[in-house]
Image (cartoon, rainbow, N blue to C red; front, side, top):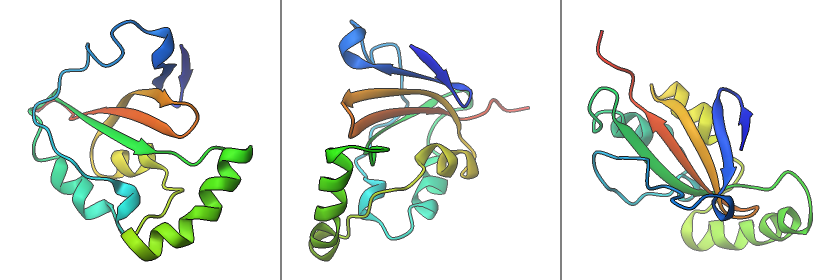
Length: 124
């Protein structure tokens, strides 16, 4: 595991219980990559967890380099026309702006699919 921007980054293949320790308050299916502006939806999600509760996001991440990045960028215009897909969001920054703190990022399918675990701050 390595630290990055104040949250943990790890690969699922190196972890037995992968997401098992991450307790979430509610389940929902939504992809930021299929929204023109994911910020309003992310702000709405911050209402759901209890204080100190967690929200879990499974999202495509645009690789920093390599053939996967080229492939995803090549497919993006077609997928955008069909489904509204666009990649390249900085999900940790969007979650922070929405009022959630990043706790962990896990690579599910390297290098493109990641699980993001964010926490709602405790009531003060």
